[in-house]
Amino acid sequence: MWRYVKSAFLVGIDVPGLGRIPLNALAACGIGVLGFGEHAIWLLGLGIETAVISSLAFNKRFQNWVDATSFKRSDDQVAAESAALLKVLPADSKARLTKLQAKCEQTLQMYRNLQSDEFEFTIETNREALKKLQRTYLKLLVARQHLVELDSPDAEQGLKAQIVNLEADLKDSDDSPGVHDSKTATLNILKKRLNNLARKAETLEEIDSDLTRIEAQVDLVRENAGMQSKPQTISADIELASDLVSGGLLGDDLAEVRPNGSSAHSRRRVTEQ
Image (cartoon, rainbow, N blue to C red; front, side, top):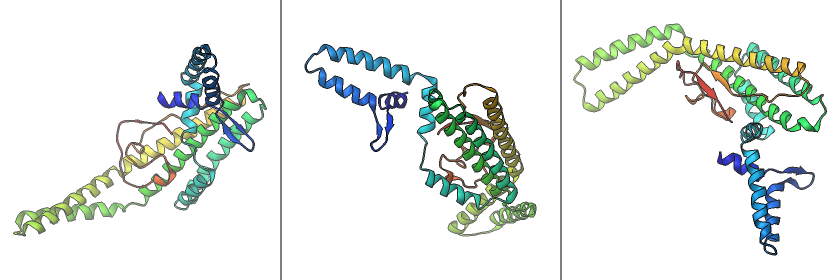
């Protein structure tokens, strides 16, 4: 809640040539200065500031806007990271992403066609929400490709054979403590690799479900935008079947995508950033 209060106090407008001006903070400073001449102004100003800040901080639309903009990053940085991730994707995955991006842009264009300053706040919030959905979608595609490129089915049999041989070796050998510890550590690694391969199919199925979930979400948003006379706030909070966010595979930054084969049966909520 503190960050909503802080954002409400610092809320402002963009002024050409000056950047963003925190109107509320400046007003508070002005009230503070005027109060030295008439102390009653301080009490009046405190009441006004409390009303303004609380009305914004507890407003759901304002909270959604804060959640969306708190994770905004430079367009150049996001574009560079996206380009790097796209290199690992096959043509069909790239086409799938392009199709989703086109639907998101079409949705935003429907909002822009309303040409009303009244909806500017909602449109900006929705733009950030759609960008978040696209980032999550890209991360899932990359995570899926990482899993597809893991060892072939033959590798599972090879790992099982290595584990059996190494367990027999540890049981029957008279190795020194150092060598024994090294072989035990190797055995643990092989077992973890085998466990990852066993979960590969399950994780791929979960990721495919998540991709379909996001596609359906974007389709719904696009259809609503075409049928409604005013934009409705888009929620970027979605339920993922795969445990890729809390497991560390899908960090907030695009650059944090990495393969680790983790998954879970519990569902995780994606919130930002």
